[in-house]
Length: 398
Image (cartoon, rainbow, N blue to C red; front, side):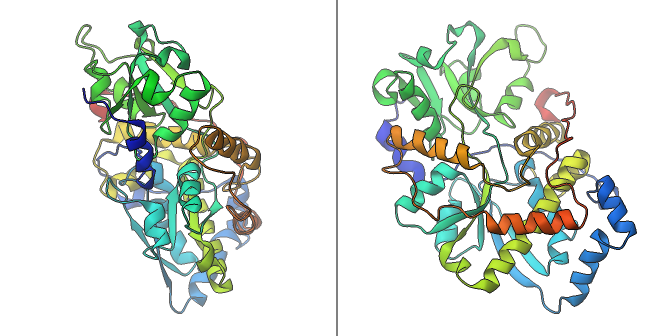
């Protein structure tokens, strides 16, 4: 196994954060029900929520074209944006939205900073590294409220804590995904490039399944499910959580501020663009509300937009992504400031950032306005009563 240097992986922070996965399947658009809540239903009867969107559409003489670039390929990680597009929520806000997929060679914050997109979905740590390097990208809506990074080993490996990674082969995707992992290792006395062998991991769990690494990087909503969708050759049954040791970095005190919406400060300096941003966030949040209230409809939407994997895997992903978003006590998209500051301090302590981000790294006013408008139209923007569904995985995620 080739050993990858710390410098090589850290240098790759200019690249993308993974969120591998996706699935396939078919479902008719007629089966998709619009997001609603008891308040929303009442609002519709009064001519508020539904009528508001219809009125906006009627007043729209020419839709504004905008592009949002994702971190990865089409999958339930981004279901809210696809739902907003397919269900007409962007059109309700007089927007003509193009959703650009991410990929290995697509770096969202670079695409955004170069002017080739109006919005980007990215992670805070990677984005703040880009800001420190001269980019003026700004977080305007923090959709994911919780982190999803795992480091997974076999239950019989003897690895129980982060300190146990010393002297082991540690799989990591790189491309910026190693930042929080390396910070967690250092905080537990393990210098990544000296005390462990860092192995460049493909965007799957094959190295762990083949026991070519001792631990592998995973996200709660994707690669972890890939393990549980795999048949154990010794038993003929699917692997279970008990077969693995799972180090949840968020739970171990190393949180991450994951998928958020970014724009550039220069672009936002135009008041007209601020208005576009509010409308984009409002429609996107409606999409995420839809996916919270009707998981199946959003899985169908993702599949119909060309996801590569199966419906079972995407259902798991949609459910797990909802857990990262809901509840959002202050309203969907609100930056959890204390957590952001904690994550940035961890990044500084680990040498990922030279200094804490300067003022202006994020804005809360645009997301707040979007939430206020949605709440006034009867939508539940906090999801206080949210409960995840139960998902049963099958072989291959079909």
